[in-house]
Amino acid sequence: MSTLSPTDHTPTCLPHLPAGKHECTGCGLCESVCAQGAISMQLNAAGFVRPVVDAQRCIGCHACEKMCARLDAPPQPEDAAVSYHEGWAHHAETRRGSSSGGIVPLLARWMIKRGGCVFGVAMEGTQQPKFICVSREEDLPLLQGSKYLQADTSGCLAQVAEKLKAGVPVLFIGVACQVNALRVRFGYKRDLLYAVDIACYGAPGRKLFDAWLRELPNQGRHVTRIEFRNKHHGWRDYAFALHDASGHTEIQPRRTHPYMRAYLSGLALNDACYHCHHATDARPGDLSLGDFWGRAHDAEADRLGVSSIICRTDKGREMLQAIEAEMHLAPISQADVTKGNDGFANPPRTAPPARPIVLQELEHLTASQLCKRWLVKRGVLPRPFFRIGKRIFILPSFIYKKFRRLFLRSL
View 1: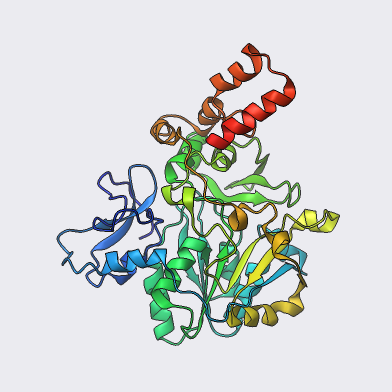
View 2 (view 1 turned 120 degrees about the horizontal axis):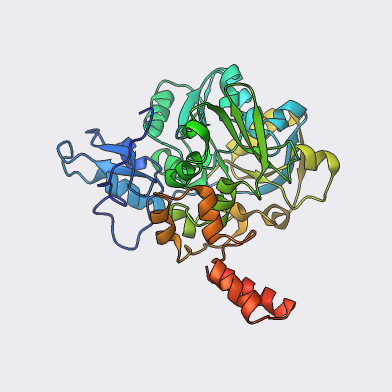
């Protein structure tokens, strides 16, 4: 489906999933195994992608629920000799168009040159990001760059199955929960299938994005491209960039952009993101990619970006060897990779108590109004508590900072 339409009757997950299991990530695994075509991926009332079951088509076989329950215990690679690397593409333009070191374009070009295809997330203007299949090099820029919005997975895994059945090599690029669904569906030993997972902070819903769109003239209809991580000010100080039909580009630092502030606050992420069991370095991809924030500051690296690379399988080593001549690649330690990278190192975090209220307020507030109401500087701190802590009690600076850290941690 090209676009998603909201629905108020979407279940939070499949109706008979055993209690205590994971929340739905919107990975589309259940949709791909339904032989009756009774499941579709749609936006629910809170703005997140969820499976919707057509009761008239469903025959009650429970195949979707059995497959969904397997997501909690995904298969593990047998050749799990893990190695850690830093890397970046030699070609400056390749790095400039990517979020970090430009490794994904190198891998994608390698796959297409050997007659394969690449599945990744593309975003057209302000539409919902969606998984697409790319088999031409000129289309690869569609997959570059981060898309900080939950992706539509409709039909993706079914298309992967068709390509593999036809003998076409496949490179699948997604966040860890999406790659985990791929592994549950096809396993590690499936011939011709290669997988790369990307470090992720969490997936915000469409409601937050629409709250920002309401601030734009004509609801953002003339926006042709969005860069969530533009490197105009450098990789470490990435910015939000908006390109319109007239060719004008507006660049705003992420620390002041309302959508980026609201997203990075963690106030309106998908339910499953608050206790993601993939937020470690034990991840489902042949390769895992993220930013290498632990690298010592270097002018060239800080301008264009450095990737951290975790290699787990023989296929991962095959991919790195295939592109090694086009990139800088050097070994690093596990501690270097996890330093400063939430997607690789952070333990599960809890949802802020204010999240239900925020999701309701997103119906009528803009992103700027949301930030003004709930965010102070870079933290998630309701303004009344900020005023009480700093102005009424007049706490000494070091006590106030401890008070604020403890309060933020409780959120």
